[in-house]
Length: 414
Image (cartoon, rainbow, N blue to C red; front, side):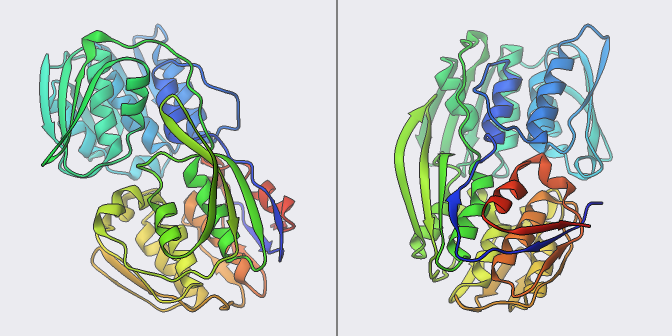
């Protein structure tokens, strides 16, 4: 464990350097596509290494995905129907996360996958997928959708997926860019996604923008810090990823979007974030699937805002790198902010724009997003913030603390 003390700077301005987008980069590497240079988190590195090892000549390949939930789920689909044996596993955190949601539909599709008590290690046995397969998504999960699409693509079979609730569409955009046999039709029941894997795809370079989920922490910092301004260039603004940004702008956050451009069908832009008075509101349920990763940092913003933030249908938080629903409550308790949690809902009563707390100790639960939330909260602390363990942050944002240091934050490793 690596604990740290954080003391915030005040009244700062500067530019933030983001790591490259995890979702786009991992999909590109699974498909064997070259990308632009940039800073990769460990999740991307783990996936890239596992893909390389999957192409070796070993009879049975043991692939280690570190902490990458995206990597293990998408690669399971991609490798499930090519007639070879693989074992996929990860670190303690990843091996504790549920995998039946991908294994069960892949097995219905014709794969031969077995789990360890519903979790990793994941055993992929030689199998041939069905020539055609139709599936209605039972949950809103981009990882499940992408796992199925990549399975059909690599096995050169046909698949049709009905997606009642729209989720991240990085896989679809990439396949369209690569001229794969993909079609998307909007129906009364949701998006109908069809792929003919036999048509293959063209290998093209992929430009990977800065990771929006990483940017969310510095968006929060810019909003919460008094008399401050941050410039965050080259941020991916995929329409299925920016519910957090749209919601904050509706809450009167001062965020300017500049220099919009599109590369390989992905929208990106530069953001300018300034100190703001946030007026909270209820979050519509349909936004939750595309907001799920940002709910922890949104909860921190809510603590220092006016009004009430109401969230429902957020049970998915329980099966992330930690039980994030519990972790958020611990953060709010440490901040001294009023909240109410019941079943899959959470209501936070903001303590106001001028609210500060005296500092304190935060449990990261070994979760990168929770650790970064604790660090960002320091901007509204009159004392130091102690975080018990920050090792997990390198999985997604290896230069997180160097960005804080450039803004004048004081960091003391313990």
